[in-house]
Structures are given as C-alpha cells and as structure tokens.
Image (cartoon, rainbow, N blue to C red):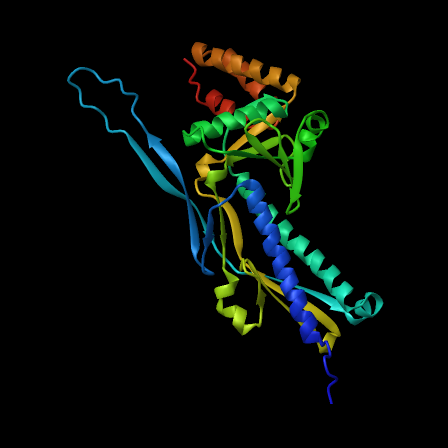
Length: 339
C-alpha cells in the first residue's frame, strides 16, 4: 500500500521541469529587457522569417533643360530567409551521480550545464548573424569607434531617437572600463555596459577582437515557437512556463539507469533589416596611419591613371591588415584603368 504524502519521482520531475523552463524564460526575458528589445514574434515551427535590404537606384538630380527626368527607385528586396526550426536537447544523470550527490542536486547541476549550452548556442547564432553586417568605418580606440557606430546607426535610421546597441569583445573595452564612470550588468552570458554616451555596449567573447557590430534596438526582433500552444507539448508531456519559450520533460530511463532531461525550443534573435547592421574596426594609431597613407596613394592613382601609381597603391593596400576598408580600397584600385 503506498505511503501517504509520498514524494515520488513524478513530483520531483515536475518541479525540476518547471524550474528549468522558468529559468530559461527569465534569462531570455532579462536579455531582451537589457537590450531594450520589445518586438517579439511568435511563429509556428517550420515558418520562414524573411529579412530585407534596400537596393537604391537614385539619380543625381542633375537634368538638362527639357530633358526627360530619370526615374529614381528605392526597392526593398529579400536578403535572407530563416526557417523557424524546432531544436531539441537531451542530457542524462546517472544513478551513481544521484547516489553521490542526491537526486535534486544531481539533476539541478546537470540542468544548469544544459541551460548554459542552450544559451551559448543562441548567442553564437546571433553573433554569427551580426557579422553579416557591412561597413568600412574604423577608428583608433573603442570610444571613437562607438561614436562612429552611433553616427552610422542614426544616419541609417534617419531618426535621432533610434537607440544604438553595439556588440564588442571584452578585451577591446577592458582598459576603458577600468578608468570610466560606467555601470555593468550580466545577463544570458553577456555583460551590458552603460556609460558610453548614447550607446548601450554589450560585451561577448563571441565578437571577434577588434570588431564592433552595431544596429538600432528598434531593428531587433526575437522570434520564437510558443511551446505553450504547440501540439508536442501535450504529446510529450512537456512543462512550459508562462513565456512559452521552452518546453521541458524529466523522465526515468530504466534501461540505462539514468534520469533524462529533454528540452524543446525554437528561437531566433535577428535584425529586420540586414542593411542596417553596421560593422566597424578598432585599429591602432600605426594602422590608422597606414590606412590613411594607402587612401592617399589610391586617390593619386585614380587621378593619374599611371601604371607606377596603381602599382604603388596596390602594394600599400595589400599590406593593410584584415580591416573592412581594405576590400573597399582594393576594389577602387582594381577599377583604375591605365591610360
């Protein structure tokens, strides 16, 4: 006969699953809050999220008397399509681990590691996406680059009320943080820094050293599969918190003497307009001087169209480190037609 008020595995599993889902929902919520992201888009699994960019064909406006005025066109074209796929994770705790640490501790520790890995995957995908931005701007030191990032974002959005968010590597802001009057908070494995004028700075090791990614907060959207209304939630007995960002189940696997945690989720943090993603380079004084010298040589070659000048420009551009403006200058040199 069962003992009255016995706390069984089903009770523990339910609590653990709710705790896991609540933690994940809370962390996502704090991430979006810290970044100022207010646009959320619930989508069914398999639906496609499309992002766009502008293709501009705008005439200079110089038209002779009586001549036909050329038609200018600004077209929004499809850039990327993101499929909202359902992702699944599984992690197991052995009977030996439970015996050594206790059921609650063993499962909690395992869930914490799984939660970190899920967060890491979301961060990694987001920063890879941010790296698709364009731009040839650069500056000496983090402050100058952030100022340029702010200026570019305001120009792109044509709105001085747009809130700029910049993503940087911690190594690029370490020296400044040590001497500046700023405040920091950590959410979702990223450090948020306030105190850089007009720019919210997000630190993450997923950003390459020497790079800054920036956009407007208003350009960011968090799309997700609402697990609370998904049929698989009922089919697999998943526990979902009020956010619906993730569904979780804990269960005993007798054949392997383990307790498994299985999580289901689908989410993407992305920019609505990919041509409003800005990428900038942080350079040293020496590299800044090198770039300026290369620009002078390219401009001289464009005017003279002499072989010697083009060769000199090509040599200077080739010697530049891997900064975005290098490709721009290379294209200009290639376009020079020797007269």
